[in-house]
Image (cartoon, rainbow, N blue to C red; front, side):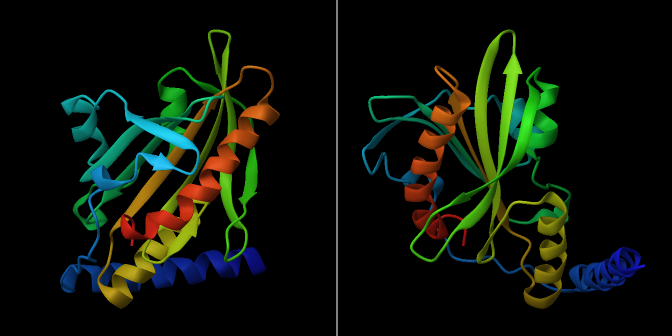
Length: 207
């Protein structure tokens, strides 16, 4: 009964939020372009990966993004960060949980992991994926409007509330990938260490 009541409450709040969204002026928060994200993050040195094809950018509906490869002498970390200025127009964040299987990568394990920061632990998604004998570990989360969220449904719920209360529907996706060379534990450890340094910087780009 409690779960059902929660679902009904979200539906009511969502309906009210959508009415507000239709009538409220969109508010854009000041931010820095993702191209200015530092290429040196801790001991990691970054270099630009190949830009996304125009049709991919159009499909994603992303307004700003950065696609880089960071290395500190060990495993490389592929970092993609996408920003959406207004998700009310039909362009919304594509979750890696749905996109990766569409490109042939199949999840073999999933869960969450806590990233340590000066303000406390931040929970993000952790996936292990495989394709043609290759394995990778993926961390991803949704960020924007002052918060970091792991869950897709929670992110959509906050989006509706923020749009209704503050006229904001901007937001972003952060996705980090490392190949499994020796073990998923090693790859996950590398990703977590990088994410711990990256997270405090992202409020400038995903406010």
